[in-house]
Amino acid sequence: MEAKKTKTGEKESATKVTQTIEKKVKRKRAQRALLVPETKIRSRTKRTWCVIAHIGSGGFGDVYKVCDEAKPSYECAMKTEIHNADQRRLSLERSILREIDGYTKAHKKERHFCELIDAGSTNEFSWIAMTLIGPSLEDVRRMLGKQYSRPCVVNMALQILEAVEVMHEVGFIHRDLKPSNICTGVAPADENVLYVLDFGISRRIFKNNKSKELRNKRERVPFFGTKKFCSLACHLEKDQGRKDDMETYLYTILNLYHTEKGLPWSRDMAEPKKIVEKKKALFANPQKELDAMIPAVFAKMVAYLAGLKFHDPVDYRMLEADLQSLRKEREKDKNCESSDEKLMDWTGRLEALLKETKKNPKKTEQPKGEETLMFERLQKARHGREMQSAGAMSTVNESCMKTMTREGEPSEAGPATSREPEVQPKRKKKSKVKL
Image (tube, rainbow, N blue to C red; front, side):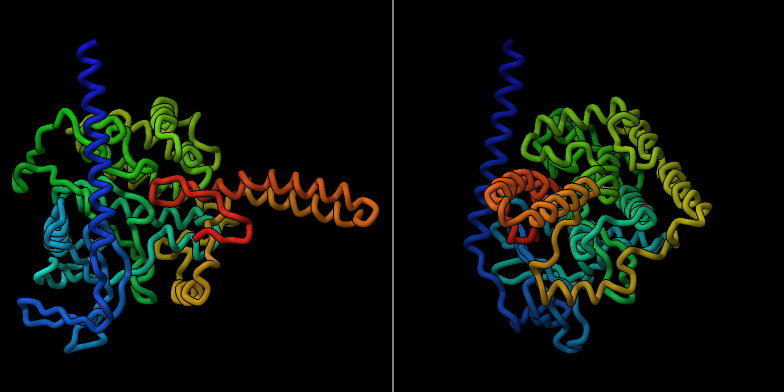
């Protein structure tokens, strides 16, 4: 009984710590003033960066599009972090980018991480300047207005796998892989290359980079991750290793296959206990839990990851071979669309999609699954039949329309569960479009 009480007390304490951090983050964000366009920031390298526009914000900093004053056509992204931030994550991100850059060049790997261009600090904040990249995979899917094609998902999966392997070889785990943390390059030249970003909760895994000796496993760790994509170990407040990164990688790829059918817990984001139960069920019986549309090779991957321990290395070549087998299968099928490893669903269209989104920011809605689309088609057909018998049947039609409105609500709320952040979004009226 005492042991149970102790565990309960520890969990309650961890929850309080998380809530306290969230409150501080909101307070800091509210107090922080954004940099206005044309603000100039000088570095020790005697470079002057001019702010063009604000791109986004985090808990203790912001991201801006900037240009080199001496060469205005040279644009990059600047990430800031206020000096009194409770957690100094920018220095870690700078180290990660610097070490990955060295490894990528030494081993002649394809670049899947932003290049660190400059760094410095002002009286108010520290900053880093890095490669400017395109929209996230989550945003691109919304811009396309449909699910990704299977060849595209395989191409994305192979690139992301290469990125995760590089990160692990350098000596870090990401701990927060998800579609919103993976972006395209800038169109048109770099639009088919994927970039992994946001190392806010990343962690070193080696005691010594030369010997590659792993750090000792910790007994208990507070929750760090995103409920939808994090590993089981994260939910259970256990230390995370490379196998856990591969688990979040797998969830990311399954979600890229389909927003509704990819992950068994896609509709349970408001119920954390159900998410944990379904993740456990997936590892216990992947063939049963995965949707029929998901290729069988992913059940094999789940079974492989289920057998890994905290300190075990990952067989990246085996996972790569499994993904390549999917590409070969589609190449044999003459009726299937192209499986060119360099092509993506947005190839040649990204610039136009971004311009359209800028003109009509509310037009891009979450892509719907087959079930939702089928329901809507049936609903429209029913509506048409009822409208034909209007007039004498006006009273009946009015009643039917009220019923249809009530039935239509769940399908509209369904796809929204795939959005980040983790909080379940409120149900919106039909006249509004999901962002």
